[in-house]
Amino acid sequence: MFTNGLWKIWLNLPRFVQIKNCHLLCLFLIFCIISVLGCGQKIQPVRQTQLKMGTYVSISIYTRNGAAGDLSGAFRAAFQAIDEVEATASRHLNSSRLTELNQHGATEEMPVDPLLFGVIRNSLNVAAQTDGAFDPTIAPMLDLWGFGKEKPHKPPQNEISALLPRINFRDVLIDSPAVRFAQPGMAIDLGGIAKGTAIDAAARALRKTGVKDFMVDAGGDLAIHSSELTRGKIRIWIRHPRKMDALFGYFFLDSGYVATSGDYEQFFEENGKRYCHILNPKTGYPDSDVLSVTVLAKTAELSDAYATAIFVMGGEKGIAFARQHPELQVVILFRGDGKINYWASDTLLKKIGIVDDSLK
Image (cartoon, rainbow, N blue to C red; front, side, top):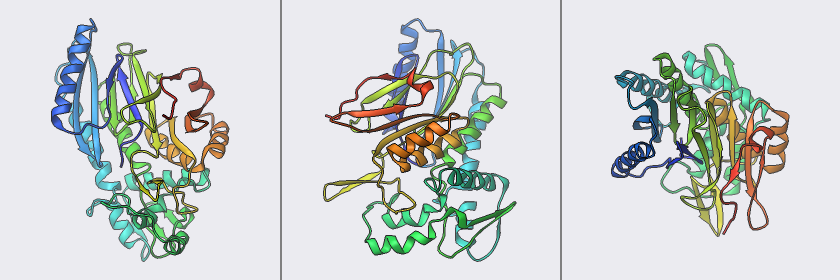
């Protein structure tokens, strides 16, 4: 649900994830096209951006000199796929199927559609694999802290302690096509996984229409697909976690799914301490020593969920987990002696380039 820490460069051109207004967006698109043509590039982007899931979702289709015919059907199919996921899995929509489940799941077994059942099942699988570092039942604790509202705040310890028994993914009982909560007061938040689900759905829709070169960017979480047209030309930038509009590093990626979780997008400061929106389900606090985590996985859904889980684990446990899961490619940033230290999986370690690792 929130903009996070990936910046992209196609053809080595910077594009910032979060665009504050339509005028800046238009100016950027003009600059991007002029720069591509001015450098003699034959690859030209066709891009549409819409506000979805609480963030800007930008879909870019890359063609040779724009000679791709009418792409309106491809864009329409991709955005419709995103709308379907949001209408199903957002607890911030009163009409969503997840909202209905949260309202009644503790009193009756609720049949849910295959899409929602699949996201819940996958979220519970990640929760089990990460020993609850990722836990979709975190919703009541997020509400207590006020994240997603106008004025988040640190709650009293007794209120946090009272809620902790409700945060337990093992109390979500699933039996296709139904879901039930084992205790009252429980609710599910899929904000840490469903944005990835929507990206996957959009990517499938684009491929189904025959599009071969595209990027789906939902607030920094990405799906990328390349043919020989764009292969070797896509650079993924990791945002600097302590400097606005600055970059930490980059790596090249032809096709894949990437997500980042960081402590710098949704946070507040109280008595000189920073509190971010990524809560530890076991303590009820944002208590990680990590600044950001970037994950590449086989789907955007898994990238999204594992980035949150590894962030919650903290540096030592997160590195140990990543080493035990070679199917994931991971970059973990954490505070060091006056600079940003990082750890990267072997594959990414060979690719990553550092731009600015200073904290000052």
